[in-house]
Amino acid sequence: MAVPWRRALLIILASQAVFLVQGLEDDDVPQEWLLLHVVQGQIGAGNYSYLRLNHEGKIVLRMQSLSGDADLYVSDSTLHPSFDDYELQSATCGQDEVSIPAHFQRPVGIGIYGHPSHQESNFEMKVYYDRTVDQYPVGAAAYPPEGPDPGHRATSAPEGPQEEESVIWTILISILKLVLEILF
Image 1 (cartoon, rainbow, N blue to C red):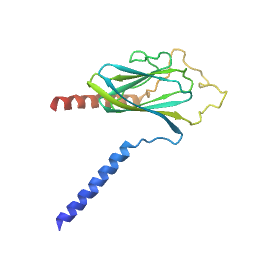
Image 2: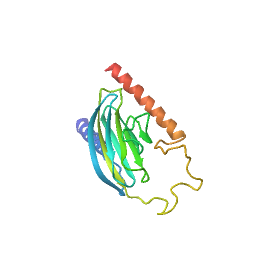
Image 3: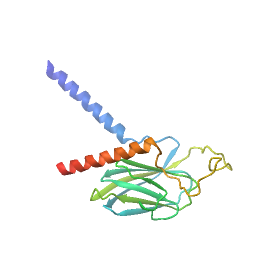
Image 4: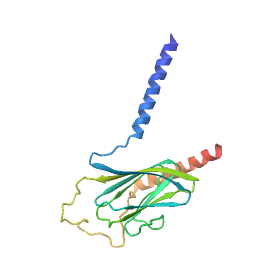
């Protein structure tokens, strides 16, 4: 009698696991985003791969490291951004995302960096056009009333406690990866 229940329980648990994995694989993409392009590539440790973005408007880059750890650097002042020279960046151990504002001068340089913690990194980057309406109407100021800080460039990094939490998670994941590499 217990055997059929165990089989049924295993089937239910397996189906839930499959459902969970499929749910994690699907991107939660707002309806206002239009997929423009999908780029897949491979990058060696400590190397860069460069792309150029010419499309106008607000663009969202979502990059997933399929293996290894690829990081994303973006600039409207150089076509070869790096971890030393960039305006926007995302350097996480998971999904990297950068929103490129419409006011960035085109062409925009995109640098994909293969983190040295892995010999090789495989990535998939999806490029979306964000069709959401900006909070400032056409002809209105592009900055809040107090004006921009002339010495400061916009970045995609969150400020305050969120940034600290992200850094802590990045460090913990890096340590976990290192321990797993040593053990296996």
